[in-house]
Image (cartoon, rainbow, N blue to C red; front, side):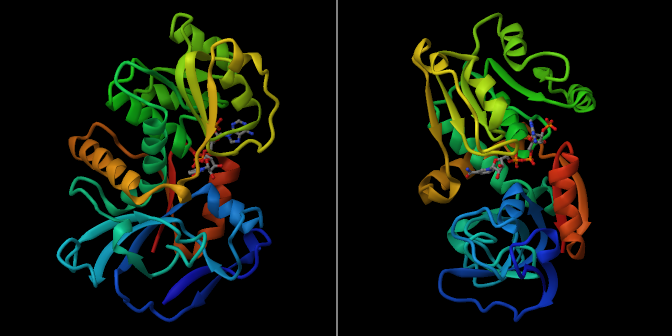
Length: 323
Ligand SMILES: NC(=O)c1ccc[n+]([C@@H]2O[C@H](COP(=O)([O-])OP(=O)(O)OC[C@H]3O[C@@H](n4cnc5c(N)ncnc54)[C@H](OP(=O)(O)O)[C@@H]3O)[C@@H](O)[C@H]2O)c1
């Protein structure tokens, strides 16, 4: 089978199109013919040799969608359309290939109203967003901020919080054109940080209240500024570093509102939390309350260009490889 494999963790040129044997179905696994694979910043982190635990050569791709060909049992009969995320593309070969033997516990049936390309970009973003909101104690009426409306985490948290009854589901962008795009797509609580400070925007939208919950995948100055908008007893979850792994914080932003900061690692989540999150996500997908956004697709052989487009061009929506 064809696969795009990182032969070395030396940047884009480390990715090579190769032939590998089709994986065998073993106990507890289903053979999935991959139709589409989500491209994530994790692929970039691994490819630049900055992720703990990954070793080359490695087929990248942490999430995907496809069709069950064998071993799915009664839960995932042959021909079922499935989406999944797990250790794939990080600790074992991933979805940038024609087939993957997937642990059945990682599979989720794709609702009929969602196509494979959209589905391929759902698992990482929406599971992370839902788990983050749950761990932060989200419930209807809370005020939520998730920076970067065009990014996968910012968009998924905003869509989920809004669909689940947040009082405010706020986001941001550093790019004026993306702020306009967000407005056109119906995201009306987005701070355009090219013309307004993140904290000023959040205070304007919430009439001075701030955010009960911040979910931040950006790091750097964005994290530092987002800490400054926490409401009394609020919390910030840090889970990514698209801008920077390093930041400086003003500790009074935690002390005065008695707020807290926590980390989130999706590879460390119990399977039960993932199952619970899937239930919420699937139900909202079926009702149309959340709508995944795909910016662009690339063929498998252009995996390097796809990753470069995601990280360097910062599109609004997901980048997906069609297999
Ligand atoms: N801990 C976990 O388990 C977990 C799970 C999922 C993801 N993550 C991590 O979370 C992070 C975000 O992932 P994602 O999929 O949402 O990324 P993404 O889709 O690539 O979006 C990142 C966004 O960050 C903004 N950005 C990039 N560079 C910036 C900078 N220098 N300053 C300010 N904003 C900047 C851009 O928005 P604008 O252009 O609009 O400003 C961009 O669209 C990544 O580091 C990813 O690896 C971690």
